[in-house]
Each structure stands twice: as structure tokens, then as C-alpha cells.
Amino acid sequence: MTAFDDREKAFEAKYRLDQEQEFKARIRRDKLLGLWAAEQMGITGDAAKTYALSVVDVEFDATDHDAAHKITRDFIASGVSIDEAAIRHQMAVLLEVAREQMIAEMGGA
Image (cartoon, rainbow, N blue to C red; front, side, top):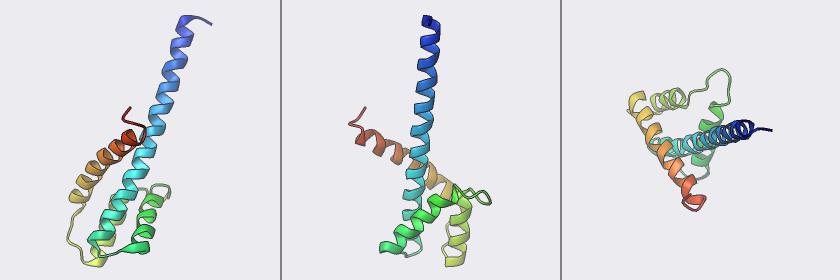
């Protein structure tokens, strides 16, 4: 095996790790987003946790894999006047929060 092969394998391993970390950050973001949305709709306690998990689940549903669309529909049904643009902004904010939480859990690496 050459140094080039070793370097290529290292880059591939780093890429896989980066992709895995980003996936985990997005799942965490969706859970945080679900908790935020539940709060906006006045949902608390275990019901809020269940709602948050339903937001995470929507990313795995082949028919509707967009948490923002789900929350927008749920807000409309609940009479909450927060539009999709604001939800998408919150998604961006919470993705950064999720990444920061993961870094903190890894000891600030």
C-alpha cells in the first residue's frame, strides 16, 4: 500500500465520519425543532416529546420528508401564525445549536 492509498483511505474515513456527524446533528435539530413547535402550539410534557419525535420521524417518511412542511401544516391547524420562512429560520438556528451541543458532549473537540 502506498502513501497515496493511505491518504485516500484517511480522507474517505473522515468523509464518512463527517457525514455521520451531520446526520446526527440534523436528527437532534429536528427534535429541538419539534420541541420548539410544540411550545408554540401550547403542547407540553410527554405530548411535546411525542410531537418532537413525530417531527424527527417525518424525515424518514418517503412521502413527506420535510419537517418544515409538517410544522407549517400543524401550525395552521392549531391557529399558530408562524410562517414557513420563520420555521426554516428556526431550523437553521437549531442546527447550529445541535452542532454546538454535540461538540460540547465530545469535550469541546
